[in-house]
Structures are given as structure tokens and as C-alpha cells.
Length: 241
Ligand SMILES: C[S@@+](CC[C@H](N)C(=O)[O-])C[C@H]1O[C@@H](n2cnc3c(N)ncnc32)[C@H](O)[C@@H]1O
Image 1 (cartoon, rainbow, N blue to C red):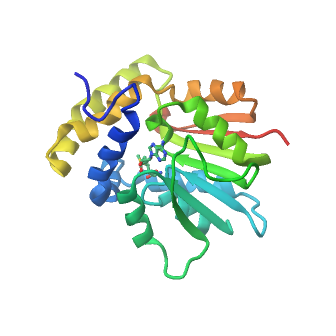
Image 2: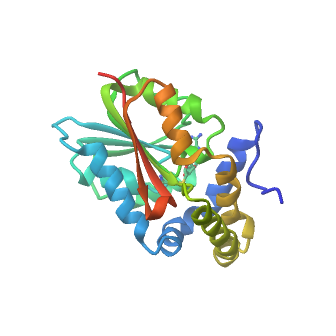
């Protein structure tokens, strides 16, 4: 059954924006319930990879930042400046409310992952949490991320994964199909809101496909960290020095 928030043409961005405008007020609570709080630990790991050995002046771009979980985690991890970018104003409003008072090191920008408003080589690391699955052109977005990374800079991507094991994958997709419509109904009286996760996952290349894309884009030190049996995954890579 087609999902009303997913389109594979030029309607993709406005539909995704409409979805996240609906989800924004309860997004954080829903994440805690849906992942039993585990998403906090996974995001901590992403931030640790993005900020390991951070020197004074370390700059991180948190793409598709939403309500800012990874932005704040990278700040706590020692980045001097973290810029969170997202194209849904309602998500950014929540992020701005959550920012510690007077923290000039966390900034939020309204913008599109496909046309980043930053100069070449302006960040030490780029993070993306549950974002690339939603963009209309993942390869174009990867090119933009690489453009704004300095040589030797890191890219750390967290998203839903697809377990390598067939049985594991079938069980996991079955669990998502059973529970996500219920989440959507409970939180927004609309099963399609969370059913979108399954629909968007169908065409998402997940950890193995992302790994190949990152290598094709010329990245080095590319690796995958599977989480919870590969149902979630972190893709890591570096722009050649
Ligand atoms: C599932 S949320 C993830 C939020 C946050 N990174 C997290 O891990 O909780 C996906 C976010 O991606 C944003 N997004 C999707 N496509 C985008 C694009 N092309 N440019 C900028 N933001 C985008 C949405 O507005 C939404 O806030």
C-alpha cells in the first residue's frame, strides 16, 4: 500500500517536510518509546566517532539534525561548534528550545541537505542521524557532505539497518510492520506517519549499500558498525587527506 508521505518524484521533499512537521511535537518521546531509549546510546557513539581527538576549534555539521540530539551530543563530546541543519522549521523550533541557555557553540540553520550553504572544506566531521533515508538523492547528498568536509574529515551516518541474515531481516521487518502503524495511530491518529519508516526503508540501501556508495564517492577508512544485530547501523568514512 503506498504511503502518503513517501513519493519518488519532485513531491518527495514537501511530503517529508509535512511528515516531520506533524511528528515534531512528540518526536523525542516517540523515539524513546520506539527504541526503548537505545537511540540515545547509538547517538552517543556517533558523536564519539565524530569528535574523537577533537582539537580546539573542532567544527561538526549535523545534517538533518531534527530536534538536535546529535548536535548536542557532539557539543558534549568536545566540538567547539556544531551546526545543525534541517529543512523542517517545526523540528528546528524544538531543537532551539532544547539548547542550553547561552550555548553559542550549537547553532541551527534552515537548509536543504542537497544544497548546503557552507564553503568547501569547512567542517572536521559531518554526522547524519536517520536523515539520508529521507532525501531524494542520497548520492548527491553524499557529494555535498564530502564537499564541506576538510581533507581527512569524517562522515558518520546512523540509520535503520537491514540485517545480513535473511531470517533476522524477515523477523525485524515483520516487527516493524506490526508495531509502526500502532505507534502512528497512538501518537498522531495516523498509521501512515510511522508506517513511513518501513516504506522508506524498502528503497534505502542501508549499511551495505551505503558502504559501497561511500567507497564509490572516494572515501577511505570506510567501515560499518552494526548495532542490535544489524537492525541499526553506523556507516563511517573519511575524506582522503
Ligand atoms: C528522522 S528525523 C532525524 C532527526 C535527528 N537527526 C535524529 O537523529 O533524531 C529526519 C530529519 O531529516 C530532515 N530532512 C529530511 N530531508 C531533508 C533534506 N533534504 N534537507 C534537510 N533536512 C532534511 C527532516 O526534516 C527531519 O527533521
